[in-house]
Length: 178
Image (tube, rainbow, N blue to C red):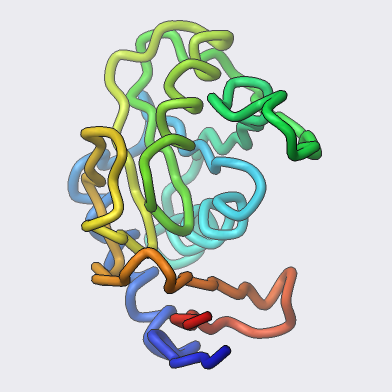
Protein backbone atom coordinates (compact mmCIF):
# COMPACT_ATOMS: atom_id res chain seq x y z
CA UNK A 1 0.00 0.00 0.00
CA UNK A 2 1.38 3.42 -0.94
CA UNK A 3 0.27 6.96 -0.16
CA UNK A 4 0.71 10.08 -2.25
CA UNK A 5 0.03 13.53 -0.78
CA UNK A 6 -2.72 15.27 -2.74
CA UNK A 7 -3.09 18.34 -0.52
CA UNK A 8 -0.89 19.72 2.23
CA UNK A 9 -2.16 21.68 5.21
CA UNK A 10 -1.32 24.97 3.46
CA UNK A 11 -3.15 23.94 0.29
CA UNK A 12 -6.20 22.84 2.30
CA UNK A 13 -6.25 26.20 4.04
CA UNK A 14 -6.15 28.06 0.70
CA UNK A 15 -8.98 25.89 -0.65
CA UNK A 16 -11.10 26.47 2.46
CA UNK A 17 -10.77 30.23 2.06
CA UNK A 18 -11.68 30.01 -1.64
CA UNK A 19 -14.74 27.89 -0.85
CA UNK A 20 -15.78 30.33 1.90
CA UNK A 21 -15.53 33.21 -0.60
CA UNK A 22 -17.61 31.31 -3.15
CA UNK A 23 -20.29 30.66 -0.51
CA UNK A 24 -20.21 34.32 0.48
CA UNK A 25 -20.67 35.42 -3.14
CA UNK A 26 -23.78 33.27 -3.51
CA UNK A 27 -25.34 33.61 -0.05
CA UNK A 28 -24.22 37.09 1.16
CA UNK A 29 -25.56 37.41 4.73
CA UNK A 30 -26.60 33.73 5.11
CA UNK A 31 -29.98 34.86 6.49
CA UNK A 32 -31.85 32.22 4.47
CA UNK A 33 -29.01 29.69 4.22
CA UNK A 34 -28.10 26.66 6.31
CA UNK A 35 -24.78 24.82 6.19
CA UNK A 36 -25.24 21.11 6.84
CA UNK A 37 -22.22 18.89 7.42
CA UNK A 38 -22.83 15.27 6.50
CA UNK A 39 -21.75 12.94 9.30
CA UNK A 40 -19.19 11.88 10.08
CA UNK A 41 -16.40 13.62 8.16
CA UNK A 42 -18.27 16.48 6.52
CA UNK A 43 -18.71 17.97 9.97
CA UNK A 44 -15.04 19.00 10.21
CA UNK A 45 -15.23 20.79 6.86
CA UNK A 46 -18.54 22.49 7.75
CA UNK A 47 -17.20 23.73 11.09
CA UNK A 48 -14.06 25.09 9.46
CA UNK A 49 -16.00 26.95 6.79
CA UNK A 50 -18.42 28.41 9.35
CA UNK A 51 -15.47 29.58 11.45
CA UNK A 52 -13.80 31.26 8.45
CA UNK A 53 -17.06 32.97 7.46
CA UNK A 54 -17.61 34.26 11.02
CA UNK A 55 -14.10 35.35 11.93
CA UNK A 56 -12.66 36.56 8.65
CA UNK A 57 -15.76 37.73 6.77
CA UNK A 58 -17.86 38.82 9.78
CA UNK A 59 -20.95 36.81 8.88
CA UNK A 60 -22.98 37.06 12.09
CA UNK A 61 -25.48 34.23 12.17
CA UNK A 62 -24.82 31.01 10.34
CA UNK A 63 -27.22 28.11 10.73
CA UNK A 64 -24.87 25.14 11.06
CA UNK A 65 -26.14 21.60 11.41
CA UNK A 66 -24.86 18.04 11.26
CA UNK A 67 -26.87 15.37 9.48
CA UNK A 68 -26.56 11.64 10.14
CA UNK A 69 -27.50 9.62 7.06
CA UNK A 70 -26.88 6.11 8.44
CA UNK A 71 -30.50 4.93 8.38
CA UNK A 72 -31.13 6.45 4.94
CA UNK A 73 -28.26 4.68 3.17
CA UNK A 74 -29.17 2.16 0.48
CA UNK A 75 -26.73 -0.35 1.98
CA UNK A 76 -28.19 -0.14 5.50
CA UNK A 77 -28.89 -3.62 6.81
CA UNK A 78 -26.97 -5.36 4.02
CA UNK A 79 -24.27 -7.06 6.06
CA UNK A 80 -21.85 -4.51 7.49
CA UNK A 81 -23.00 -3.12 10.83
CA UNK A 82 -23.04 0.66 10.52
CA UNK A 83 -22.54 2.96 13.50
CA UNK A 84 -24.98 5.85 13.69
CA UNK A 85 -23.70 9.37 14.33
CA UNK A 86 -25.41 12.34 15.92
CA UNK A 87 -27.76 14.60 14.02
CA UNK A 88 -27.69 18.18 15.28
CA UNK A 89 -30.17 20.40 13.50
CA UNK A 90 -31.31 23.27 15.74
CA UNK A 91 -33.38 24.81 12.96
CA UNK A 92 -35.94 23.94 10.33
CA UNK A 93 -34.83 23.99 6.73
CA UNK A 94 -38.26 25.02 5.47
CA UNK A 95 -37.75 27.54 2.62
CA UNK A 96 -34.01 27.80 3.34
CA UNK A 97 -31.14 27.37 0.93
CA UNK A 98 -29.31 24.31 2.23
CA UNK A 99 -25.66 23.65 1.46
CA UNK A 100 -24.65 20.03 2.06
CA UNK A 101 -20.98 19.77 3.02
CA UNK A 102 -18.92 16.59 2.76
CA UNK A 103 -15.22 15.85 2.49
CA UNK A 104 -15.22 13.46 -0.50
CA UNK A 105 -17.80 13.00 -3.24
CA UNK A 106 -17.35 9.48 -4.55
CA UNK A 107 -20.37 7.48 -5.81
CA UNK A 108 -23.03 10.04 -4.83
CA UNK A 109 -24.91 7.55 -2.64
CA UNK A 110 -24.23 9.47 0.58
CA UNK A 111 -25.67 12.61 -0.98
CA UNK A 112 -28.74 10.66 -2.15
CA UNK A 113 -29.21 9.51 1.46
CA UNK A 114 -28.78 13.09 2.69
CA UNK A 115 -31.44 14.31 0.25
CA UNK A 116 -33.88 11.87 1.85
CA UNK A 117 -32.78 12.55 5.45
CA UNK A 118 -33.07 16.34 5.19
CA UNK A 119 -36.82 16.05 4.51
CA UNK A 120 -37.31 15.29 8.21
CA UNK A 121 -36.42 18.92 8.91
CA UNK A 122 -38.67 20.61 6.37
CA UNK A 123 -38.71 21.34 2.67
CA UNK A 124 -35.68 23.38 1.59
CA UNK A 125 -36.01 26.11 -1.00
CA UNK A 126 -32.90 24.70 -2.70
CA UNK A 127 -30.02 22.35 -2.00
CA UNK A 128 -26.41 22.81 -3.07
CA UNK A 129 -23.39 20.57 -2.54
CA UNK A 130 -19.92 21.59 -1.40
CA UNK A 131 -17.14 19.02 -1.28
CA UNK A 132 -13.43 19.23 -0.60
CA UNK A 133 -12.57 16.39 -3.00
CA UNK A 134 -14.58 15.43 -6.09
CA UNK A 135 -13.78 11.96 -7.45
CA UNK A 136 -15.49 12.75 -10.72
CA UNK A 137 -15.18 9.41 -12.57
CA UNK A 138 -16.64 7.30 -9.76
CA UNK A 139 -20.32 8.32 -9.75
CA UNK A 140 -23.12 5.80 -9.51
CA UNK A 141 -25.74 8.58 -9.43
CA UNK A 142 -26.05 11.84 -11.41
CA UNK A 143 -24.89 14.09 -8.57
CA UNK A 144 -22.36 16.91 -9.03
CA UNK A 145 -20.99 19.48 -6.55
CA UNK A 146 -21.80 23.17 -6.84
CA UNK A 147 -18.55 23.97 -5.00
CA UNK A 148 -15.46 21.77 -5.13
CA UNK A 149 -12.07 22.15 -3.58
CA UNK A 150 -10.16 19.80 -5.83
CA UNK A 151 -11.08 17.35 -8.54
CA UNK A 152 -9.30 14.00 -8.39
CA UNK A 153 -9.21 11.33 -11.06
CA UNK A 154 -8.70 8.20 -8.98
CA UNK A 155 -9.30 4.70 -10.24
CA UNK A 156 -11.55 2.42 -8.20
CA UNK A 157 -8.72 0.65 -6.35
CA UNK A 158 -7.40 4.00 -5.12
CA UNK A 159 -8.88 5.71 -2.09
CA UNK A 160 -8.87 9.36 -1.09
CA UNK A 161 -8.11 9.78 2.60
CA UNK A 162 -8.86 13.19 4.14
CA UNK A 163 -7.35 13.84 7.55
CA UNK A 164 -8.44 16.74 9.78
CA UNK A 165 -6.41 18.24 12.61
CA UNK A 166 -9.40 18.07 14.97
CA UNK A 167 -9.78 14.32 14.51
CA UNK A 168 -6.53 12.98 13.05
CA UNK A 169 -3.91 15.40 14.37
CA UNK A 170 -3.08 17.02 11.02
CA UNK A 171 -4.66 18.48 7.90
CA UNK A 172 -3.60 16.45 4.87
CA UNK A 173 -5.20 14.59 1.95
CA UNK A 174 -3.70 11.37 0.60
CA UNK A 175 -4.34 9.24 -2.45
CA UNK A 176 -3.92 5.67 -1.18
CA UNK A 177 -3.15 2.81 -3.58
CA UNK A 178 -3.84 -0.72 -2.43
